[in-house]
Length: 309
Image (cartoon, rainbow, N blue to C red; front, side, top):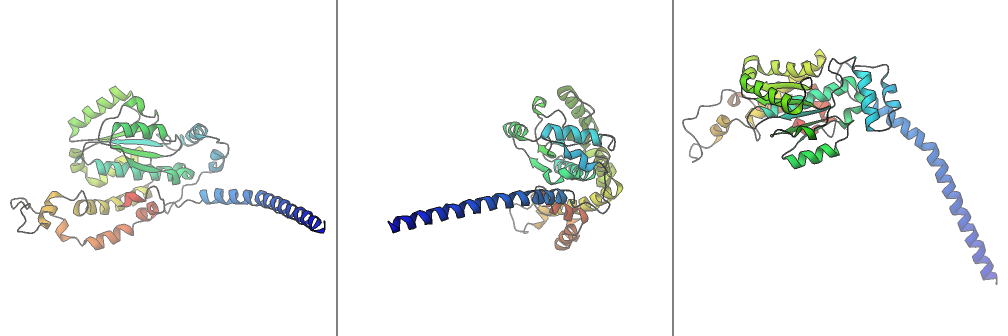
């Protein structure tokens, strides 16, 4: 009988201990969660920006009452439209055939959109992403999964079915020359039913005339970038382009041929040498690239870090 009493007492003590521990955990959670949420909000309002930070006195109010994607989308647009001539741009598609400087356009649109978001809606910057879509099925899947409030740029080598494109998406494309560019723009207007959301048709003819700096300023105009942001972009892409041409998968065919051994059966002896790459120390160029302000800024954001490669 004493053993039974001891067991009962021990059981009661055990349940009393568990109850107190559970109540203590609940109370502690209720105390800590508001502090944790407050810290998250503080961190989200302290996103890394370029040297000149663009502030908005109503920024906290913009996101305070948003409960889901559509609310956030509408509230942000209404608040930022008066600050950016084109309103807030959240989504963009870069369309272009291979070997038409489509990679340049994709990267330029991606970085421009990122800086645009940092400028006008910094709380969304950490959600910015840029992806390549290889086929129509994958594109449809990505469009269905895409959050309307998450900034994103999609690159593709085929023309999209515009019925599958979100109706706030800005369209960019590449072309061989001015004539081809006019045809491309006409196709987008006819099939996608919009002219005001066609960002820029980049053609190789214009690129050779106005140079990389001039092309980058075209994107800066679309995304309403500040002068200091344009300076950072020009510094970044000037070095990025050298690395793209002189190493990696998109290396110049002339430089690739020049690097082949003289006895290689793949070497074309009649092909001209590259005018730039032989004179560069690639290690030094890479080091200068990683020291640029924009490289360091992009590197802090996990979803965009691959754009530095």
